[in-house]
Amino acid sequence: MSDIRVGILTVETLDEEARDRVAIAAAAGLDFVGSTDHVCFQGGSGVDGLTTVATYAGLHPTIGLYVGVYQLPLRHPVAVARQVSTLAHFAPGRLTFGVGIAGEDAREVESCGVDMRTRGRRATESLYVLRRLLAGESVTLEGDFFRLQEVQVLPAADPWVPLIVGGKSDAALRRAATLGDGWTAVFTSPRRCADSIARIAEHAESAGRTGVAWRHSLELWCGFGPTVEDGRARLASAMERFYGLPFDALDRYSPAGTPEDIAAALAPYVEAGIRMFHLQPVAGSSEEAAYGVAQVKQCLARAVPVSVRT
Image 1 (tube, rainbow, N blue to C red):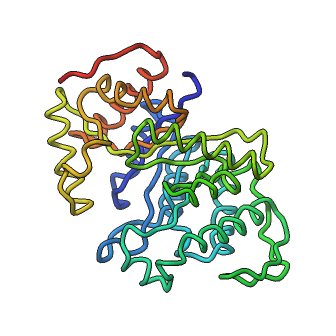
Image 2: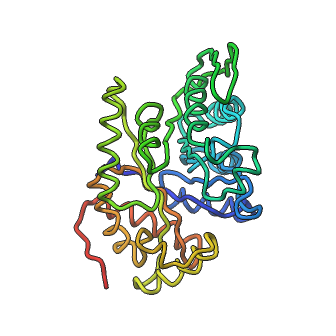
């Protein structure tokens, strides 16, 4: 399992402790630090994912950067291509860019002037434009949402910035298969992950895409504690505060306990084909969170069977 990559995905706002969090993640041996992305989620909260990881890039010279998932339909793809190209230029080889279609908060989508009913098709068209622009191509398009005439964004991303596509619908899986370099799962079972990855392979083959170095990934919250119960208590408080939902609706996909407990919960996802884990850890401190995630990675890399405590 040496190809497993694990990092921390934060939902925190940028503050004076950001430098320490990034330094701790790097010292713990994590592969990347990342950020969620929202414009005005649930009445105004959130951070811009690209701005946040650009800040992280300046706080450490080598650690990988991940945006997951960027609410692509809420922005113009040409402007997004310029942002990604710029960050790729100043942090070459470090960025992985996850994109989604938005929709968790209808008011957020509507506030950006986007019709909820068309955001999926808008995301597909945006991703088509983004992929071509990042490759340095000149794009002319008379689309449903964008009109472009010989538009270029230079320099081309070199090395390439992997585009990881989120979503559970068949349309999202087709989008990942035809325009992405991987798929990211959220609140999804191992079995559904395996089925979705198989469908992506089928869609890619039908579209004539071969030889893709797929980077399928999973985003999930996890709670660290000396027991499953302790970790779950921490996790429940944080997730209920963030989502405004009872934890009972979320805990099925949100492991808790020691690093060994959490690694045991993630092992079936590795078997399903997941190779990148974007963890949102809840712990007693930044150090406990980062080193806990690092131990999860070590458990998965060793491929040692571990048992979940009950």
